[in-house]
Image (cartoon, rainbow, N blue to C red; front, side):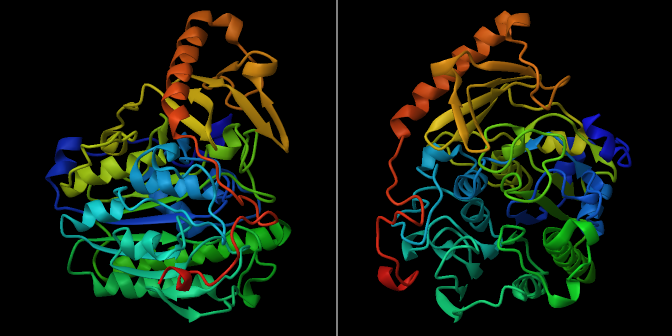
Length: 449
């Protein structure tokens, strides 16, 4: 059974949504790791990797095993989380590279901008990956402070920035997670007396894998990957301890999740597919949330949700307004968190670059295009899209389209409607891959000044 690994988290639901809303405005800490799979946490079934600090977030709060990243790759996923919108709406459906001259447009409204407008201090630590030129930089997108890097740790030049200034031109990645955790401790202490939003975006366990020498062999058979994940777990422990130290545990919403499924290593749990694939393993990621003031320990909600839901949900809890002049695809899911409510989504859409890969209803998933292990099949061209019963077969093994023709037709109609909606948003990005640069490599910010 898919959820067997979560049996230790017995379902019990918290106080009502009305009681949660009556609480003072909470702080928000979003811990967003890079390329960690659904099955890479010990509470989600990891056999060799031990993640007690990350696990404690769910044990003391909420676990949602049917949670999805906003995309199956880095930049689109981060854009979806930050804006509450599917990536094509912001033109961010491809991964930015060191030679890219584009990024998250300034007219997009991020979680940081939304919360800053209602009095929150906002800080970002870690991997941005939404454009490395000055006009796209975190400090231009709602963050008061930034310590981190422009993109993934396999891209160059890979330098550490504070604000817009380089503080470490050639990063020692064995100490990078410690640097981030130390900065998180400072940020929490500095803003303990005011509402704050901390976005902590670790570079790991994206390859290449790094960890302090003393952690070598710590996870045994899980190798360097497991040692890297356990190093991230240490950082999460330090963040949680800093909240405790400053008396912020009760009314801080702590979210832990990943930007997509695992890449060359790591576990997708029982699901098919990895990072970049259009099956479940590319999109389904762990999601744990702790908020003692509003959510009882051991809460469990098995309905579907997506990273696009964070922006409207944070808006609800912070008393902020979501943008009214654009489509916001996310929904307020605070009742899912606090009262065991069903998903407010009739459908979720899975975007792959410029196209629609799948449509998910609470029970079924219509898979339109399969990109798996370097093979790409557009079912609409070569055969028929497949329908999976996700409650009975989350591993996407058995096509049941002929068993549920009405549902198949309904989801096909919704897929055609969404495909037509995003078609005008299609973009061509030159130099998507490092071996085919469209622009010369150069200093990250200096070209923009």
